[in-house]
Image (cartoon, rainbow, N blue to C red; front, side, top):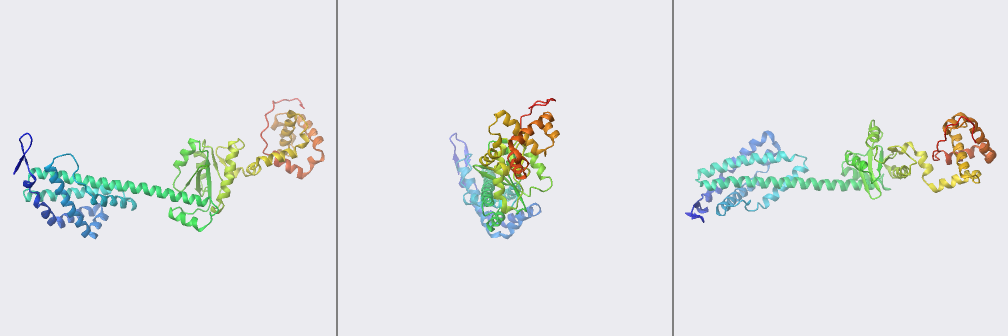
Length: 416
């Protein structure tokens, strides 16, 4: 029986399409269809072929559901032709989304799964079209079936792709959360506990023999870029006042030079290598080094804290250091600022060069006779204390890291 369209032309009705007997006929062919799919998958996708064999009952039920859905969408297309995708695939979509998630969890590539779907679609269409012709399905219905097959495969492919991406994203979020928890443990007073070993195991982080911390200026874009490119063996530190990374086995061959090159211009400090249980104290030392770097006392780029432990010890408490300097330099307190500065610079150089007058003169760019004159002044001011080893030790502690003196103009004549 024909239906008339608005312009008087005839279209084949659902009742005359011949689709009524298609599902039973397809169900009869399912064993052959699924066997052919398994055979085609065996060579390139043996895991999928094995799944079809192992889960034969479940796969058969899903395939029967697919046949019913296929006819339903074809009938809908005949009754109300449109470009819509047809009835919702419902549970099938949810199932194939889960298949996509499993694909990610098992570490497989999404494209292999989608390629396998295409193999299944080709076999399915071969059997659907042959069966439809055998039971004399109308041409319009056959065309609707063809569209339905590929609409369905497109839906299932999209569902699996969505599941794959969602699982990937969720896994990444979970992984980063677990890595952050590990970092918190490593930076806490529980850095040598069983909790660290358990947290490291959860994220697949092999416990190293030694670690070092990298700290960067949070405002430095170069540093942020370097952190984003570190390999997964490095654990990122993302705290409001502490930005950087924990680097395993920092002294292994080549790593130090790579870090020095990568971190140049990043305003970075690399802490000294320590066993895991000592990491919190190493971080505190690195933080002091970062403060000294910002104040201009440490000028390396980047700063390796291990090379500046002496300066870090001296400068870790600026007020204490200033108190020591006022105390040991008290004999210069009544002099004018310019004279006091010249004698302080000379005294610091004298301590550095162990009294070598020529080396002091070269250091300060003054005449050796000027050095002799200034040292005579210093002996007058300090008296016998200047020859006392303990006084010299305290002066060295106060002045060895004293800000560099302003270079005096070279002058061949003695100056006071």
